[in-house]
Length: 133
Image (cartoon, rainbow, N blue to C red; front, side, top):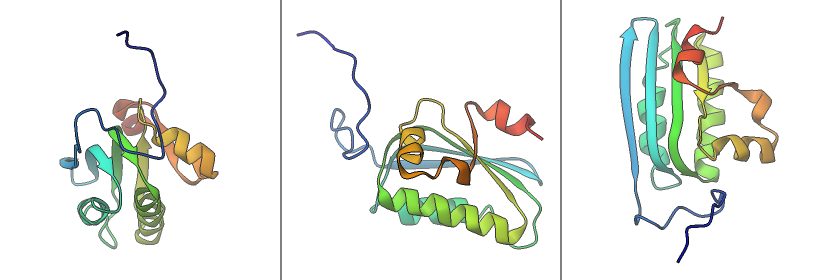
């Protein structure tokens, strides 16, 4: 058996390791910068955890940059996509900035297919997102 290269599927989670769930880690580098690293599957089962943890970084009146590192997201369903749009709207309402780091995540392709790429500030690495004006 040979391992043929393949593209990540956007319509089903990776079944290779059996349900990876979701992990969200928040590192607040300063009072004005938080880096939120997300890994695993972002779907209707894990979206409430994701939205709560990222949304907590976007309180009203706090001028903050939130870098959302999605490089470790192996699958994103429609619930995850909806959550991203709602988090961007929340950031806009609260005067915060939200930047998405896509790296190798299939999220970039999903944003492209849905026409939402221009809705977000997109970056390849956390360092690029932190340094952008």
